[in-house]
Amino acid sequence: MTSRPRNRRRNRTPAVWQPGSGAPSGDLPPLEHSGGGRVFVSWRFFSALIVLGMGLVLALFFISDAFYVHSIAVGGLEYMTKEEVFRLTGVANMHIFWIDPEEVREALLQSPSIADARVTITWPPQSLQVVISERQPALVWVQAGQLYWVDLQGRIMPSRAERPDLIHIVTEDAEIGGGLDANQRIPQGVVNGALQLYELLPDLTHLRYHPIKGLGIRDDAGSNVWFGEGTDMPEKLLIYRAIAQNMAARGIQPFEINIVDPDAPYVCLPVTGCL
Image 1: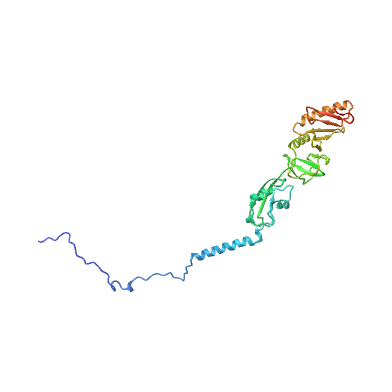
Image 2: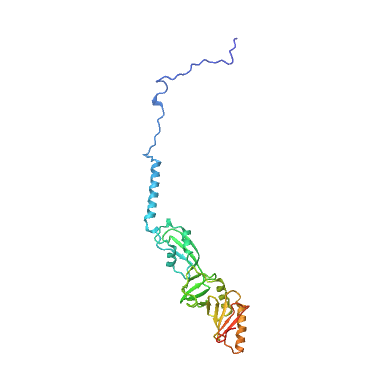
């Protein structure tokens, strides 16, 4: 019995494609096309629509009067008016795109009446919102017939209302000429001294001011009393009272009692002069 080889290789002829051979074209599966009348639009068209829409929106922003500032919303008002604050901002008829809130704040702080300000830009109709803090007066300064408010730091600002609760300091035109402006300041020693005297003499409503002799009063006896300035008014007031009592006990009516220098006070008499 003859055995066969276990691994017998079969000879195969390589396949070669011939034109016209293979499956008929009619047997190929048909290509699928999009159906239902669907239309494809280029992405460039959508981009053009977006750009056009943004252009229309920007044009609306610049053409529409609603985006131009004709009024503002103001908070924190006590003495100032909304119209005054609006004028100080300098943004009348400006487009909100061109407004810098920090520049508006700096413009507001140029006013001596404003201590601080917060500026916010929002949507119309109130495109600009401002909240201010006004400076508070500590005393009233009267010079050349005009009234000014003075704060604790000596800053001068316009007088906006009657304040009988504040001490009034009156100067004379012959001693200090002209009015005051916002760039000037009352010396700190004058402010401190005036507030001390007002506290020590609660019935006092007015003080006098002399550029050399400082703060003064005319007492009940008719004497001109000068205290100078500074925070040593309690000591000076004690010295004045001691001198006034001594003069009254001796029957002397001084024309002036000067305690500008508490270490060297002096008295001036109508006839004999200063002692």
